[in-house]
Length: 58
Image (cartoon, rainbow, N blue to C red):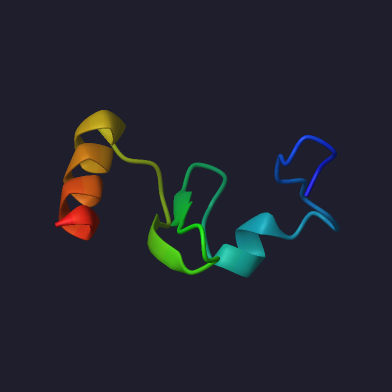
C-alpha cells in the first residue's frame, strides 16, 4: 500500500499475478478476495460493472 492507502505495483507483476491484460480489470473485496475479474477490456465497461455489482451484492 502507498502512503495514502493507494495500491502500488511492485516488480511490474500486476498483469501476471491477476491473469489480466493491461486492458483487464480486477474487483477485490475489502477482505482481499477477488470478487470478479475480466482478462480483456470490455466494449461497454459501465454496463458490465453495473451487472457485476448487482450480481455480487444480491
